[in-house]
Image 1 (cartoon, rainbow, N blue to C red):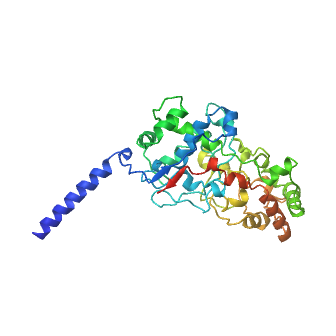
Image 2: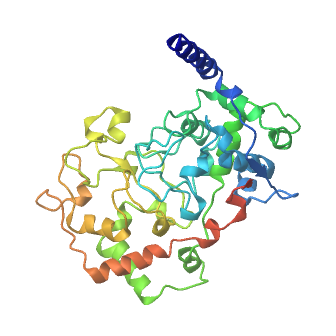
Image 3: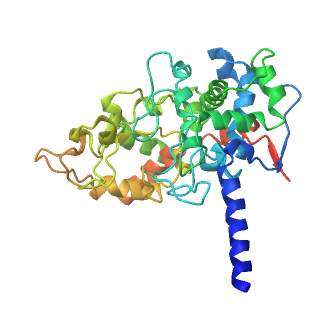
Length: 370
C-alpha cells in the first residue's frame, strides 16, 4: 500500500515538473524584485546626440542592460558580467552565468566602441576576444541566449519576456516615437545604443592631452618606456588614442603574444579556421586598464605587474608568435624589464583611468533592489 502511495506521489510530482519545464520561458516571469527609478528628464548622452540616437532610446538600452528579467531565471543581467565600477569588465577571471556555471573567457571591457558601427549596415568592429561579431546590434543579444550566461532560448523569448515587464511599455513608446510594440530588433538597437554610448574621455591621460594636467616624473618615465624603449604602442596604438576607439576588424588587431606553446583556446583561429590564426586574440583597449583586472582572455594574470612579467621573461615560443615579440634569432625576446621600469609603466597606465566614467549615473543601474 505504501509503495502504491509513494509511486502516485512521484507520478504527480513528475507530471507537475514536466508541465512547468515544458512551459515557454516567456511564461515563467516571476513578480518583479526590482524597482525602476529614472529621472523625469532623461540623462543627456553627448555621444548619442552626435550619432543620431535619442536619449530616450539610450535610456531604454540602459534599463535593458541592467534588467535581470532578461535571463531565464531572473538572476543575471548584462551588467552582472560588465560592471561599471571596474570599467564594464568583470573582476574575476571567469564570470558566473544563470546556473552559476563559469564562462569560457574573461569578460572583455566594453567602452568607447566605435559609433560608426552601431547599425550594422556596413563595415565592422571586432567584438569578443575572437572577433566573431562585427556589429553591436547583432552582438548584444548573444550573451542573453548563451546557454551559460543568461540562458534564454531565442530572440523571440527575449522579446516576450520584455513585453511581460510592465515598465517597458512607456519606455518603448518614448524611444520609438509612440510605437510601444516590442521586438527583438528594437531591443538589440536600444542595447547597442547604450553600450555604444559608454564613453571614457576624462582620464588624466586625456587631461594631459588637453593641456589641463601634467604627468608626474614617474608617469612621464612610464610613458617613455611604453612608447619608446619597449614599443608597446606598436600594438596598442589606436586603443590608447585620445578618442579611445577600439581597433577595427583587421588581422593586425589580433595578435599571438606567446601566452602558450599549445593552444587550448584557438582564439581567432577557431573563427577563421586558419591554423595561422591559432592563439591570436583581440588587442583590447587599455582605457581604464588599471581597474579591469584580471587580464588576458582567460584572466590568467591578476595584476599589471604579472602582465609585465610575461613580456619581461615569460613569452612562450610558438609558430604564430607575433614577429614583434621575436628577436634576431627568431626566438621570443627577453625584455628584462626592471622593477623600477615596471613601477613607472604601471604608473603611466594608471593615468588611463577615468574615475568620472565609473561613477557616472548615466551608466549606472536604474533599478533599486527590493
